[in-house]
Image 1 (cartoon, rainbow, N blue to C red):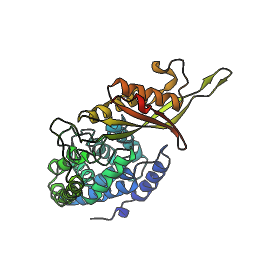
Image 2: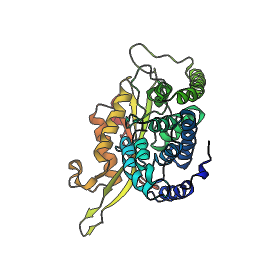
Image 3: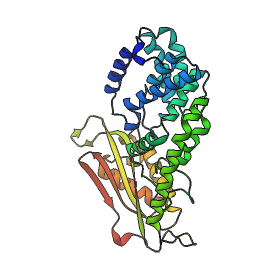
Image 4: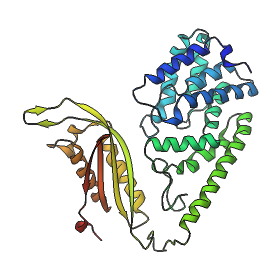
Length: 353
């Protein structure tokens, strides 16, 4: 297998890629950084050699496969492969030595993504897809999935039903759910024989991790019983969830009006859990509120008509929305800036018991 440095385009492409990542408006999560790109490129070249694919196409496509980044909870996350593929021909034509491979590289990038649902149309595309999926398996895969979940404040696992025995999977709320929803399926979806062979030991690593986790969690739950009538415990429990959103606003006061500006906001809320159905209902209600404010100008929202969209006002509004969903919210916090939070709490005497 030729070293990447043997290709005259490799060093200039890496330099341009580093500059591109450094110029992005927001930092990437640790699972989709330059390290991930380089590891995927190494896997792609290994697979290409074993499968008889064009190694230059596979290497270049792997280096450019995450050219466009969106967080996994972003509405455009599933479109990033296609968005990157649209940029790739320009990058290749501007990189001496890759001009005549532009279309093949773009095709491989376009179909690599799991969330995008792409189907490889060439051996090289299959190699790149397998390389990216191998990167999601094994010990590195375990590290990456929790890094990704942490980047958008997903919990490690559901505190009362970690392995989703009695609930639907929700990997946007609970990172552990992503193993069952996607990662454990990947070995059977590899397109190349070498990819399937390399996936097997990595799959075993993940199974071993999950088994160890089950043992540790079972020890924590030992002696606790779940009553048949659907009550979680004989005690009262609270569950808090946190979500991020991006929104613009401005303060409009008599004699003073701010310029429109944006923030990376955060909402965190807590509810009292009584029934098994409360947790998914809570997650859906909070997600619905976030969908209503994400990437919006808050001043234009009908629910805030005539009010200044401050963190305090948003916290009160979100609390009332949760109450309207027949939940028992305890408090809602809104973060406008790193050092500025507003909290709206339900008075203890008004909580319906």
